[in-house]
Length: 284
Image 1 (cartoon, one colour):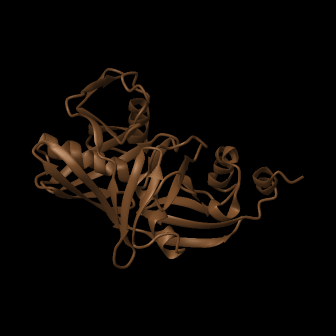
Image 2: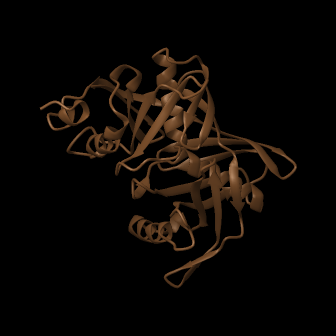
């Protein structure tokens, strides 16, 4: 089974082309769990499959979290799979593809940069403060796309907190009972009126990742709406690097939400796992 491994500002993914491989869809959750497990396999934050579209898009993006659960969408994954599709002649520089949260458009820019038009926010609640284990947090709740990808955007003193404290508190917030789907938890600290630091605890991965594209975009939306950030172009600093968010508004309505950042091809090869290949193809 041929694969490519890519990363976008530290968010790493294993990508396969099921237009060629034709693996039954029901096999993918277990394949994702095996391939994404670090030390036991290739290791990644997520597993992505390029598949035939149902409609007129260039392809379908199937996304699976590290634990095998289906992800509605992943911003950095969308950027990486866009460049993969372009390099492998599945699509041109400008493309559309189907995701669990709707149709996504993207463009491969100069060098390794990719710009993705994310699903617009269907829910924006900037006054969604919460209390978890007796601690009150300033919080916004945002869902991108339909069905919505849930994000909590939480004000936090990141520069004066240790990693263990950040992890423990983010994990508690992720399971807050007021979030019906759970939530990806984006802890933010504003640096200036165009820049914020963000650390995201991702559902499915169940850890702080080096980057989360939809989380960074959701954070930018919340901070612009609340007046922490000014203008419609902002920089989000994540542990894995930098992401840039562009927002087009019509009055108070967000019409377009763009995620821009670097992509990097790490490796390409063939999966030889003696436990996994029989699972994928039903061989004994």
